[in-house]
Length: 239
Image 1 (cartoon, rainbow, N blue to C red):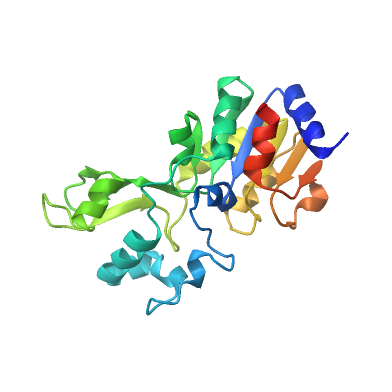
Image 2 (image 1 turned 180 degrees about the vertical axis):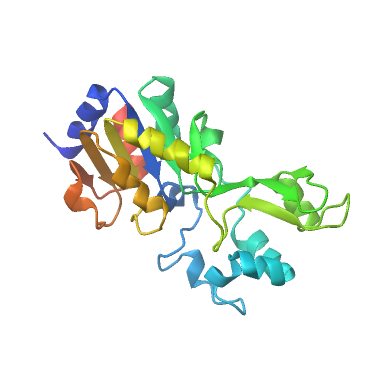
């Protein structure tokens, strides 16, 4: 039995399937990842390293430079769900997939139709004024260039920046689903970003599936490892 058929059989036999995804899920929607050769961290046209510009202290003290980077490099309003997003939504609709836990902030799982999406790092479509607390979506944030038109305060994206902690309620929700899962599919992530990657240790189920284009340090613990496109693999499963 090849790996694709093996994965399909595992999913068919699962009672509590959970998906944990990273940047590789969205690269097939032409959203760059962070650490690859063409990733966001390789941008050389800014006066500061990208990781520094995405930190809370940089946001607090260099807001103009923060928004120049954030609006130009982190927002993809025209991005559409790819085969991976659509396949996961179909698995949920078939009552096979119980939850998606994502490190991504692009909201593409919801655009594909998924309902139970746990966003570890927030969502670029949610933004709040630091003064009057008014809500702004992504299009409005871009239009107003990060300045609230109502009170002239800065608008803070509802995403987790470096130096900020993950939301405790979100963490609890993610751990709850992972700990209940009999099958956990981890896709599009090298599992090198902490603390998110550490959530895998809460999985005590039967099948740990890793789908990533390159090997990870967790491959030795997996039931099944597939080094291929996440969209290609998942779209095969639902056919």
